Image 1 (cartoon, helix red, strand yellow):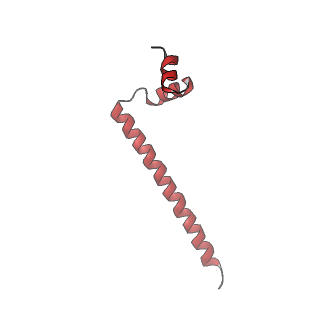
Image 2 (tube, helix red, strand yellow):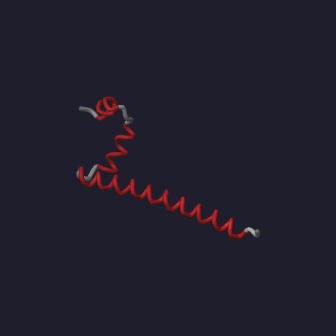
Image 3 (cartoon, helix red, strand yellow):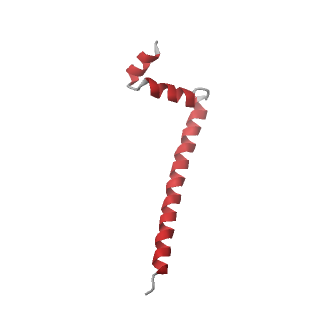
Amino acid sequence: MATADVCRRHGISSATFYKWKSKYGGLEVSEARRLRALEEENARLKKLLAEAMLDNVVLKDLASKKW
């Protein structure tokens, strides 16, 4: 089956197909799942760090005000 037919069947663009192929092409299924899980965990940790840093800034701002 041609690449264009597969892309059309699954509703993705050819560019997306080739991007995924370059990213996941040499990986086994278990490795790809592990990579995706690590990326999701990394995103979650970045979000937690950003929230903690924002809380820290707010607390420093409150502490610096004179009552």
